[in-house]
Image (cartoon, rainbow, N blue to C red; front, side, top):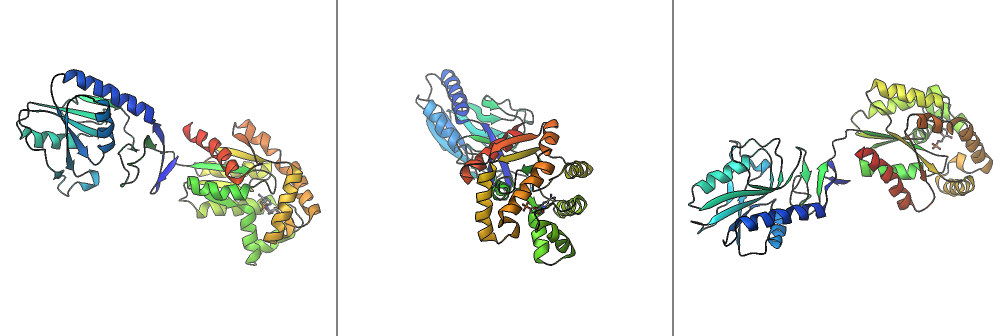
Length: 371
Ligand code: AMP
């Protein structure tokens, strides 16, 4: 997945597929124009990459020129497409083949036909790399196309989203999936917080760590903080009722999020059920629970190291850490079966470099997005 401005795009058509389609079109046109020297007219800006590849595949005598019409956003208030770079000179009596990157509604096609109908060309044809045939409403029958595609916004191979993406060698399609909600699962020290901070950037998600919310409340001396502190200091879980209400508040505060990463929640079956019910009431759901797996001895070392830096009271004493693991084994580990039964449980090796672990997680998430 890639991000351009505020939107996400997923790979759609590979470079190899594009080049094969370009070659096929070039061969067909070469066959039709045998013995002639046609003028290919690229429509800027979007067609530059297509024109270049097309000409490399069209190894017969030909000429090349460009026109430039203002694009989508450039439509004037009157709805008229402006010509910014005019038709080539001396095209009278010649065969002209327009090379367009994409044809959708056909507005540009109409304008091209308008401007070329005033010239005395011998022959006029339109070739487009991508063709949204379902939405094309023009009367003119498109002569050649590389690939028919459905009506979804694409970028790459010359096509842009607000000027970004033109230089991509392959074509990406907008990712219209609205939300991904993930549970990051794993023992204390498994790296949930670290990974969440990367994943939230990569996938534009809101990260909710119940542990962080508790610590924030403790720091600010709130009632909730005072209550939670007594449990946290002992390495015990804070009672479900308190935690569930707090979590729901956090989700509601972020109603505009494009998805959530739940980190450290749910930790009990009651919390998992409450989360499912709550999400259903918001027409949301958990898409996946991803467990970061690591063995206890590795985790204890990590936590003791972290305790030296963070000052977290529950990370500094090995007995407390072991107690948190016991709590985990008894209360949280059974959630594996809970999510397994829903077909949502994924396990990822949590040992390795931070980047490697992020890629393992990304692989799971991207499979979800493709599903
Ligand atoms: P964490 O930062 O996730 O390791 O959480 C630190 C501590 O906060 C835990 O040991 C618990 O005492 C408390 N806590 C965090 N999340 C929860 C939860 N979902 N349920 C109960 N207690 C929690």
